[in-house]
Length: 611
Image (cartoon, rainbow, N blue to C red; front, side, top):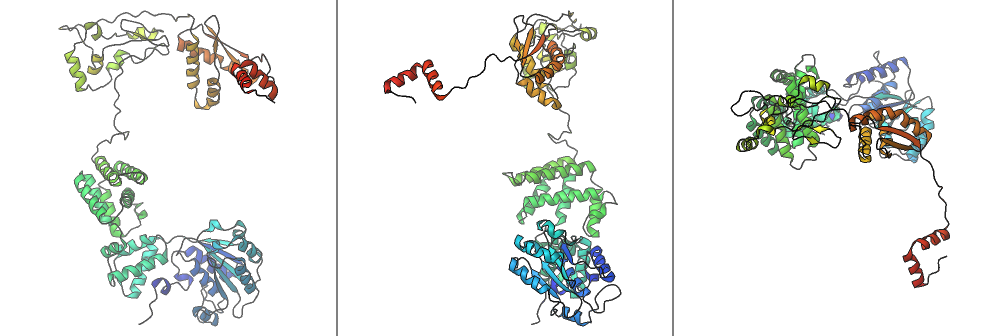
C-alpha cells in the first residue's frame, strides 16, 4: 500500500510565491535576500498554522542557494537546495523549545553556532515555540543572540510573543503573521481538491475555512477529514453533517418566521435544532451573527464584509430587504443579552425561547415591556406637591390633564359609595393667584407637612376620571375659592427641623461637591436659645473659612425649606476646654476602684492585690 501523506505536509509551500495569505512578509524577505541586507535574528510570531515555520525554512533554503533566481527564489537544482529538499542539509538546524528548554540545550546550540557552514554561506538556527524556554535559558542565549558569528542567523518562531523577554524582542526583527482570510483559504483548498481529483462545492469549502479560523494547517486537516467522509465528493450537506455545523438555512427560517409573527414555527425549529445536539448558546450566537450579516447586507458597499460564498451573500441581501434597520438593531441587542445571561440562567431553553418570542414581537412592531420605547404609564398623584419657589407644583388642573386609566375595582367602589359634594369639587387656583402666591393655602381637608408647607387634598374619584365633577343634575361649574397670600412665618423653629434641613441641603449638593457633602453630614448644627439662630463648630481655621463661604447658600436653602426668613447661621472654631491626661496602669486602676463599687467588692472578697 502506498504511504499516505496528509495534505498539510504534502502541499507545504516550498517557495515564497506558494505561501498563502502572507504576501507582505514574503515580499519583504525576498527583497532583503536580493539586496543582501540580512539581519542576524528574526522573530516570526502569529497564530498557529499560518506559515511561520514554513517561511523560516524557505528563508533558510533561499539564502544558502548557490544560484538564486532573479525574483529572489531558490533555484531548487543546486547542491544546497537538493540537500534541503532531501532533509540532509547541515546548514539548517531546528530546535523545539517546548521539549528542549533548559540551559544545557542552549549551550549545545551555542557550540554548534561556532562551526562554519560546509556548503553555502549561512548556518540557520530555527527555534520553534521559543516562548517555552526557561528564564535561565533565555539569559544564557542573550549574548550569542546579540553578537553571533557572521555566518549564523537565528529565526525564532512563537505563537505567544507577549511571553518573551523584552531583551529578546529588542534583538530581533519582528514579523507578525496574520490569520488566513476566508477567500484565500477557500482558493487554496479548491486548488488542493483539483490536484487530488476531488469535486467540491464552494459553500462546503467555505464552511471548512470558517471552521479552521484562519489556520491553513487546520483547514487542510479538516479538508482531509471531510474528503474521507464524503468519498471524494465534498458537498455542503455532508460537510455540515460531518463537522457538526449548524446549517445557515435554519437562521434564514427563523428570521422569516419572526417577520411573519409565526412563533409556533420558531419554537418547533428551535426544538429541532436542540434535538440534533446543538447547544442553545451556540444557536443564539449564530443568530446574532446572522442579524449582523443582514444589517451589513443592506448596503452594497458593506456586503463584502460577510465572509461567505456569493450564493449565501445573495440570500443575505434578499432577506435584508425585508427587514428594517430598527428591527435588526433591536434583535441583535436581544440576542446579545441572551448570550450574556445564558450561563447564569437556571432554565436555559426558556431563556432562548423568550428571546425568540421578543424578536418576533419586535418584528411585528409591538413594543416590548421595559424596552423604553413605550410611553411610561404614571399613576396620577392623589395629593398636591409642596409649594416650591413660590409656585404650586402639580395643581389640580394640571393633574386633571394627566392621562390615567381607572381600574375596575376603583370604578366599582366609586359607583357604590358616592362622594360628598364638598369633596367632589377640587379647588381650582386662578393663574394670577398661583403666579403671585408665595405660600400655599390651607382649605378644609388640607394636610400640614413637617416642613410647614400645606398640602392640599382633592377627590380621588376626580383623579381617576380625569375630569372635574359637577353637582347633581347641575351643569354649572363650581366656583374656585379665593386664595389668600400668607407671609412666611418667622416663628422659632426646632433643632430637629434645622438638622433635617441641614442634611437635606448636604444631599442636594452636586457630585463635584461630594467632599463638602461628606463634611456637612459629619457636622451637627446646634440651635441657640432664640430659636432662630443655629451654630456650627469648625475644627480648624480652614474648615471655618469653607463653612463661612457656604453660609449664604445654606441660609437661602433653609429659608425656603423651613418657610422662615429669620433663620440665621453662625460658625466658630471649637474650643478645647480641657486636655486629656495620660494615666499609668496604676492610676487607671485606682480611678476604676474609686468609680466602681462592684470592683471594690470583688477585690475585698478575693483579697486581690493589684500590681
